[in-house]
Length: 92
Image (cartoon, rainbow, N blue to C red; front, top):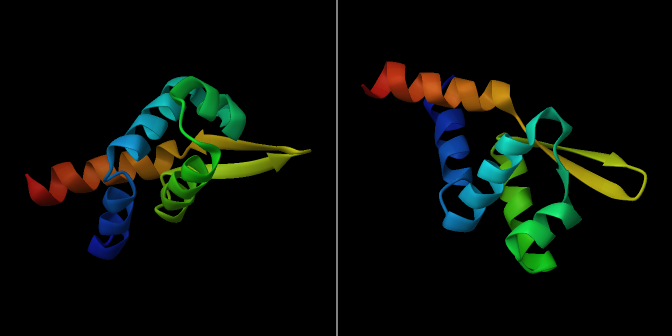
């Protein structure tokens, strides 16, 4: 992983609400959660949540998949592991 891709990923989780969303998605596993489920569990307004999910997706730390009318949000474990490895191997 190059430093630009790593910095984008780390920046994506650089706020408390986005870190809360990511933590919730990691705990949800490979099934992920719908945007509505996340909103209900965290109490984040819909427009604000959409903004945070976009940052997380742009940073590569989550994937989004539309199924019918529902948008599923899923932690991108491969990218998260690569970010962790980058941090441990390059910075420590």
